[in-house]
Image 1 (spheres, rainbow, N blue to C red):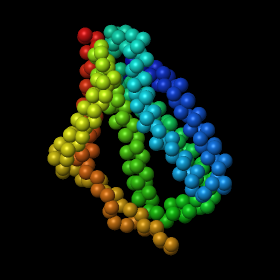
Image 2: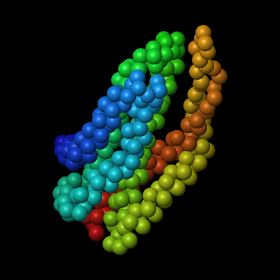
Image 3: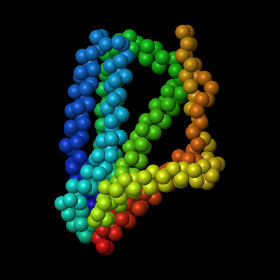
Image 4: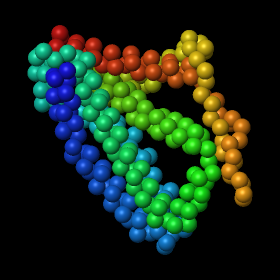
Length: 257
């Protein structure tokens, strides 16, 4: 495990520049929106504060590639794999580093949105008034599911991109087209495994989402408006696990070749 943690710290340090750059841009954007409170239409600065969260998946794509590209171009990837470092440790450390950065930057973006919401006194009053009337179980369930879905989307994006990039580096020509082809094949494979999971894991209870009805004098939980097939989600999870195994095996193949 010590070898893994050393790799993880090294990979996390390699992402420090892009993490700092994204953090500075996010904070600058939030400060600008903070100064617009009271000057723009109420609720607009709060809505715009979520823009960094929309760009984070693109950041994951960039850093998922960069986590391998710099070491591959310098040749240090071959040195690490020739030492007593297995492919699965190397793949896991890079995946964990990208996922950790994604998590920290997501929390930073959400913190900025919260401070802006509290700055808008009218909006903050409405939010607190609704939250006081909403059943705590409903609120925690929605927050957990939405947060988990977004969090796992970062993991899935990093896995797919890293698997595609490692595949592309095993050829000497046409690496860009191989990258695109591997990315498409991974996405298609996940889609097919989701359908397979619908049949294999049909016995798993589905996820139900209920709506919140907000009236002039009441806030109550309405009927279920969305049902998510748990079997499809488990099929995707199985596919992501296979992608990780494939990435580790391909890395090991680099040494054998």
